[in-house]
Length: 260
Image 1 (tube, helix red, strand yellow):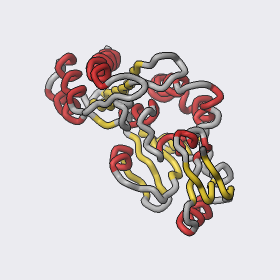
Image 2 (tube, one colour; image 1 turned 180 degrees about the horizontal axis):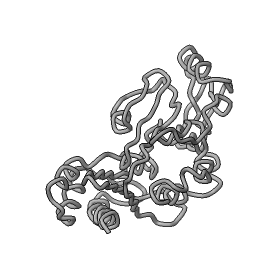
Image 3 (cartoon, one colour; image 1 turned 45 degrees about the vertical axis):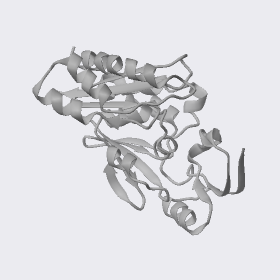
Image 4 (cartoon, one colour; image 1 turned 120 degrees about the horizontal axis):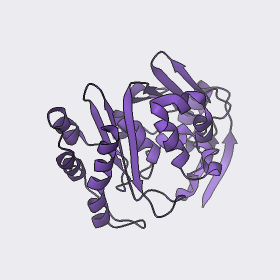
């Protein structure tokens, strides 16, 4: 059960951050889509919907998405529809239901580093940065390793490159969370990015496999290397052994798609 003592809707990110650090027990609720995944008391729930960070725009070769932007707004945006040959749009359309996409936000999905997130896995496979109000801009993979709790995710920045993208996952039903997911991207300079998520931990880059592919194009071996880089666990979705078995298959499918 979630107990919220006070609710606050700031008019700016600065106002939101000031409340966050000055009020004990304050939290950014990030639309609240996943807030009931745990039971706790929140002294002050901060809602960013009026803070001016709901947008999708393109500046140069960068796609910028505000932290308070609902996933549904991102999905319907013309910039996203055209990005990466429409593959990024396909990923957003795979995220749960229309109703949930209209509620869940970019920041509310990324900042908590949700282990089951399909979106984080895909963004890792692209060149994505996060921008935090206090800690500034950093690569997504760096942010996922940092222990940052008191900050506001103002936007994410995706480099709009000539990069092929593939997303693969296994789930029990269309509206379920992934039991395991993988994303692969590739550009003409032979730069591969491979991410595996829902292990059930948050997604990580398969750096050994990425380095292997710089000199070798053996997809079977690269898929095996990527899968073996990580530890897997069991939860209500599936067993550790099942995740270990399907990981190389998902990576292989992704590599085959981007190399077609």
